[in-house]
Image 1 (cartoon, rainbow, N blue to C red):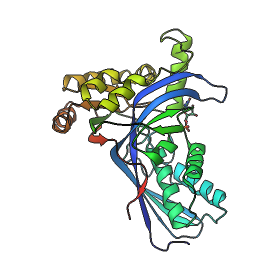
Image 2 (cartoon, rainbow, N blue to C red):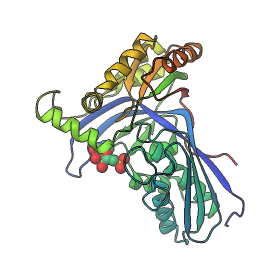
Image 3 (cartoon, rainbow, N blue to C red):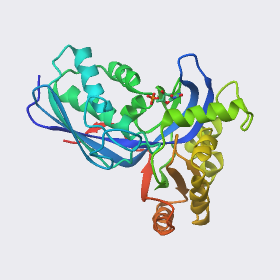
Length: 311
Ligand code: C5P
């Protein structure tokens, strides 16, 4: 049954507390062992009945059409593609007016576009009354992008394959982070390509498989910030630093400001700085907002749930 009221869904940003990147596969993707953590910074997707598809985008990155850091409001937007994919899967007409309100910075390594796609799948499944099985939604999500299944499930999860195969993992408590958004966005394919180049030229060690995630999984289970701080790994970090040397300063600034640890989030350029508790995160955010290396600073906590209907 089709719903006549607007459906509002919010979906969280993610950080990777572990990002082990294996060799380039034949299909152009890299084998991953990653540990995703959904954090309390959300995009909101609102869908209403409409004739054909339409999309408006507001907030961070809205109004532009091309390049990293900019969000298209047309068919190339991942939310639009999510709508077409679900309509096709369910055998319904793709009729909806969609609005994406962005708070997750764009091309920042926080999977904001993936959050929008996941939120759209959940919202339109409710609007159109398609009642897709969870496994089907996860399958559609995987077709849209490697990080989209995790944006559906949220929480904390191990990602394997190219990151699209997610299994929930236990987090012993909430961790507190400050996200430092550093300058212009970075393109994910460019960062992976830079890692391949650094490995081919021997500037970073080559690998035959992704770095295992066990230490960070144990730290997450234990729930102690100190142990988590010691086990953060991001194999993409050298590549992000190679493309954006100013990120070294951003990482140093986080350490100097009292972070328990700091790591580039995903393909960057966001720096995820771990705080020992909530109060420390508030202090760290205030400090980092004042140092002049970040365009924006956000204090967040995780794990939080994945894409959910809010009204
Ligand atoms: O899956 P998604 O569309 O987010 O991937 C964007 C790009 O990032 C891919 O085209 C690929 O260049 C790179 N990528 C990769 N290995 C992964 C995930 C993404 O090389 N596991």
